[in-house]
Length: 252
Image (cartoon, rainbow, N blue to C red; front, side, top):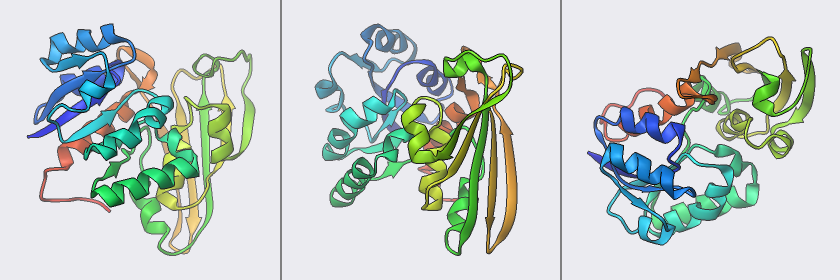
């Protein structure tokens, strides 16, 4: 049974706890200690007020389900303490310096950094496509004004450009584009639309290359307890964790 430490005890942390099955949550850490204590009562894991005591617990890897800032603040120390890490807030890796530092540290320590698929499908296909040539890579995302914290009374394009620029303007909302960039090995063209008529996030991936072309559209159902979180994103962490100990590996 894989043992994990959980950073971030909000909605995603609760979904992981409710569906743990073959996963044992050993330790909990959150910037808001009361949230960790609340999840402690549900899981039986130990809540910690300080990262220094949290990271010394006997678990195999850390699941980060907190924020981009949490990745920047703790990822180096997690790897340095010989723990693997699952990064949900993949937008942090839009910073090439941080990405390369973490990759090199993981290599030196013999550890792994895992990126779940998050709120989309098709990352396996991007990894395959990069072996040849990808000529077009576009992410078109449509969100409600509320989810972006802006006001709008009609559908409109609010950003068009590269993923590494989009994540700077909307750091909490376009982790998908950074995950695509990492899988494809190149920056993604992003169109971010706001539409007051939608109540779910819609992601459309357009990929063209030597292998052919594809278009994948995903309409995310919000998490039951937090409409701001994609339920698919939370489930992708569970799928990744449950697959780590399975000797049969499916997909690229």
